Length: 371
Image (cartoon, rainbow, N blue to C red; front, side, top):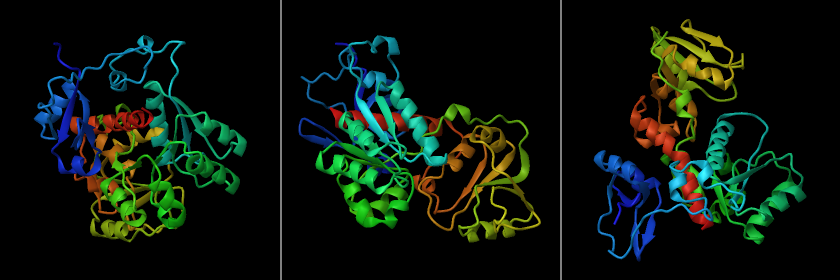
């Protein structure tokens, strides 16, 4: 018998046990998931999990690509050329991705990357926004196998009622993909939304814990989706004793950041902001305008440090991961969600592998729900 291409692993890493789901097989519940054999062996050597080798003998876990089923685990991991499973006769799984499109921020950038990967995996994804009329939203949800509810803050009441009616009364399966803490400000609305979903996605253990406590829901944690090949350490032009600070706005408190600036007079801080009312001041501080996201990799590579110290809570904070991938020394506090993973936020193969895997883990879970 040939070696199976997919194997079941049982998590050993406490963070994985806490933040990932379970697999039920032959009446046995395992804190783990299916992985490509080479990836599973690598993770086992690194102590992240152990491969389950005591499965019942009659069961053979080998994935075969069928033209009638484009969403196999093999193509989820990118091992099958697209032209081998995409044919005119294949009906793709249709996903309605519900999201505000008012501004382009971290949530929108992350969502765009998740959607891109989902389409590469073979899903037919339609974005539903506040620009769509209620009747269009209704028909789109009814024609979908599953909905992904992202941010829905700019939808009007008629649109919201249309969405909730489809999810709650017509029982269209959905998942909630959360990017911040705003829903905790409207608990009566959020509680049923998170409790009725097939699963909820949070950006960090801290992010999930806050929602579990407030809403009585459960979920999984996945880091922000980042196109890691765009963020690399070029080892060119970095200046010692310099620190970058991103997206400081005057309507937020920055006491922790200002204290750090005052305590480190030998570091030159560059604060990127379009808000000239920002409260961060000092002889070692200069202000510069924010730039297009495409320019950020080159900018990260100019600085020794990325300083991101919050007074409030940040679900994940993508600048932290982007800067780490570009070789910055990251300075964060416990308000930054990605700090709660307990990982070393430094450029490494392990960090890149972890971030690259995250969107595929999401679509794997979606595929399980649809099946």
